[in-house]
Length: 331
Image 1 (tube, rainbow, N blue to C red):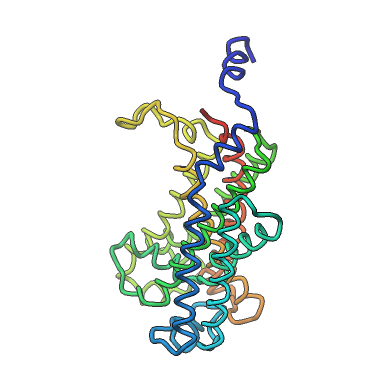
Image 2 (cartoon, helix red, strand yellow):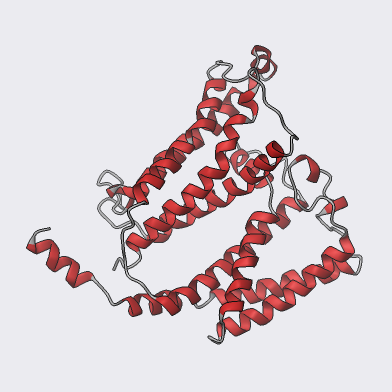
């Protein structure tokens, strides 16, 4: 490192406490928002506990068993009561966090809500319908899917509230971790199996499926091409987490060329993708270990490439965290 670079780093470096306090201030809205969301969640649960219409789980979700829902067997009354209790408790915890009175148990509650709402409640339909959006198809949108999206929004709010508290307590400046590049490359590679299989089908190559499989869906080559292309694009964008163009927009991009990439612009989409991959991948993994799906030498392509979703999502979370650590003190 030459003298000019050393002076630049000293000039732009900021105290870790300042960075932590800035993060807390920037996310100060998150705890009140999580509280309001929890109140709405609890009131909705109370309505369903009293027999209200539109319950989107259990018997109210006819596709639940087909798509790996973990809530396929819940009953409306008990489930609504649990929602009402969690909503009330969440509102109280959010008030404590907004008043800076949060301690360990509050953070445990916040992260537990985050995990449950983002991973346990949603199923493969979130990623399925995300892919179909690129083809302009919304035929599978229904009440259960909207409820999943509502829960994902709540989980994101709880994550933001917990992160604001963590950042404010611990601070921390930018740092580079040694595992950043390996885990980022791993995430990019894990994006390829599903993409390669779909692109192969779009090209008429029966990779991992019987010959008749493609003939039965010969009009679906466009769908396969889009789904496969999304994986390839995802792999390329993942590489940006450790490349210069992931920090500064390339010069050839109109209006943005040469400007710094906002941290959130990389982190938010990556975390959204990670959530969908973990949601769908965990269901596919459970189906596999419980024997609900089987694969042979002739049809491994139907489900086999999807087994990369769960490790892909986990690796992408780690890669995104490493990117955030490296750039969080960016001026």
